[in-house]
Image (cartoon, rainbow, N blue to C red; front, top):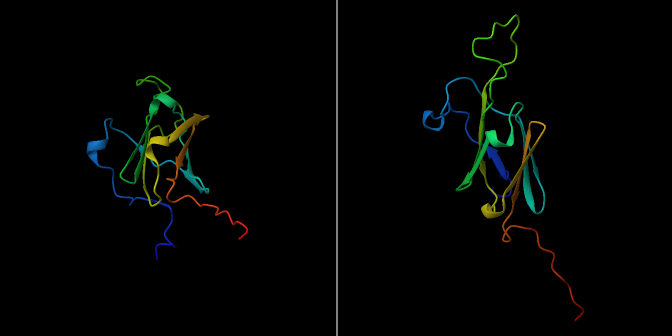
Length: 134
């Protein structure tokens, strides 16, 4: 039923479309927390190594796309004694079932975490009805 449908869900984990990628290399799917509030959906994505300028967020026709570029910490020809840090870009796509006011979406980035606020449209916000004495 529609009532049981989640407000936001992961898009299929199919391989990334090559048309969206502008750089070769590893691509990570960032870990994400999603909270539903009365007024909005809040999406927090863990994207270590990124800055606000490295991140692109797109919301189009109910589809939320998050992309982040991670810049290399060391020169290309660096000689590693140990290398465990998997350097790569971030990419994640979600299908949003709620009606979102795209013009009011905001984003903030702090300490490698991207937080998106997706306000619900007036039509889907809970509404308190005033009861008057008759």
